[in-house]
Image (cartoon, rainbow, N blue to C red; front, side, top):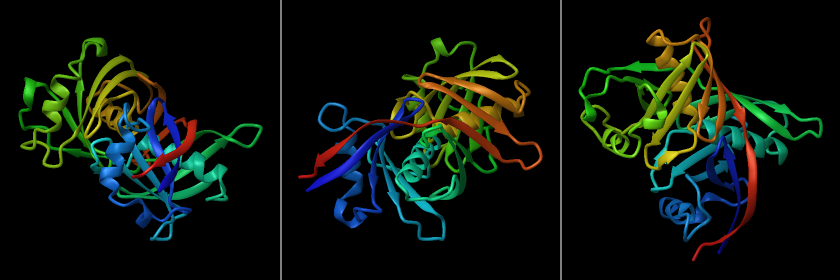
Length: 271
């Protein structure tokens, strides 16, 4: 069976998107296995995972489910949510520039900004209220860290330079350190440039280092504010591009704004 897909990225965080408003999820077979095979950068399409764009079952305008490249399902992805927004608006799945997205991490309100030709240039996602978690358990490497949930878990570590960040050594060790993180965790290494600018690299749970992580950028800004490093609005420089993150003081909610881009589309032969 051939599965139509579209490859998209948000700040370099690339996923394979399948329109399950047209193709029922039941037709995809074992989704965890499909995610592993499609995400393979040598034998598949290549990506940080797959995202299913689906009809909502709780009254939202559209729903997303995301699976990492190792086949595990995650609660949500900030960069992927912007790509879902672009696809859903431009393909008529949603009719308004402001709509509700159903995720495993709850309902996310999204607003899209348009170019003059009517295409989506960027999207702003209300990521909800963060939760500051316990950060007293010692972790591999002995790092001081701030643990934040954006609907999914994050371990934010502030360092002098992201160029020297031990992403590929300490990242996987901390990700799987279940004593502190029973559901595993995403690991962010962040460098404070000034009160409105942060550099960040991320080791994503179930995917390894990626060029960007939307929820990770949100968690990093929250951790930076909590630790007195930055203002409540900052530009985060990621390997794949920039995201603007704001932690609203009045509402307590985190807003993420960034790009969403098409790469290519095709069909995957699902043997």
